[in-house]
Length: 238
Image (cartoon, rainbow, N blue to C red; front, side, top):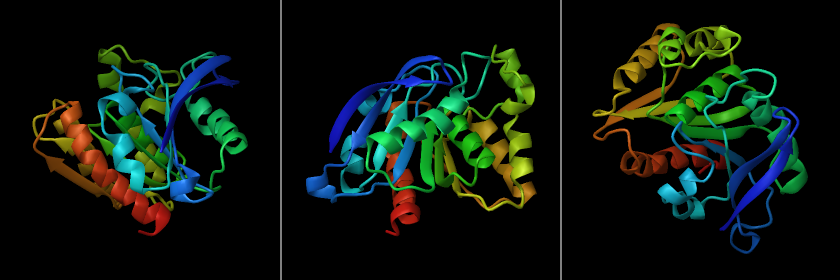
């Protein structure tokens, strides 16, 4: 595997932004094209967190994924004003850049993340089901709009932050393979259980798992392996 930190110009953000990539080595993985996996960080980290705080490089060594870990600041991976359009960065600018820079497989991607990135991955997968084949989120910050506002997270328009309404709107659509998990000692456990119940009421197929553990890298490092196994089944037929 090859790792790199890349800086690109984003039209949506009107500035340069960085991402970290895990790139398959053609001598080991073959010439490609390679399916893309977005791996999103949490609110207290940046684009390098998955690389340096987990064993993700070692875990993906047997999978020919191009793993892209973009920087999302504290955006919750949404648009929030004229110069903070992180959703547009992820869904427009970054795919165009990847297509022109790497030998990627066109079509649907996989996506995952933790905490803020777990919220982002679930929200984007439900909002753009035609763009994603597999999603697995860990310890997701699945707050209601009101709960977000109490924590100081307010996004215009407010409806864009309502993952419960987004899930309701996704009912009946062809959705990606949808999975998420949370630790039984995680402070976000009740929010994850609530969203699981919401998806059940909507009849949206999904996998929800609980495991011993808290909101920390020990937990995420362990369970990202299961997420990669799902992505491999869906994206690679393994």
